[in-house]
Image (cartoon, rainbow, N blue to C red; front, side):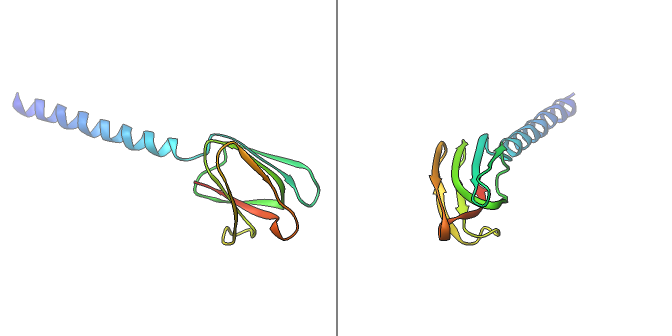
Amino acid sequence: MHRWKRLARMTVVAASAAVLVTGLSTSAQAASGTFAYNRADTGFRMVMENPPDDECIVMPGGAGVVDNFTDTVATLYRDEACTIPQDTLPPNTGGAYGGATTVHSVFFG
């Protein structure tokens, strides 16, 4: 009888741990909200819904006006490889860039 109680307790602990790990990993996979920018080359408005976290995202055409309406900090970069930082936008903020300060990629996280 004692063996069954111990097995049941171990099962509950293992299941709880799995739920915690799964719950944490799914909530950290994407910034919640909208990130938008006006292409520097055409002026067209580009919109990303719930962009992924911890991933360098290239912004084709570069970005002139940027709006970060997500719940995550967006770091903007001058290059497409996220190696030359330009600016950091906290949630619900925006910025304008042009010429040598045009941004070409973004990283959330």
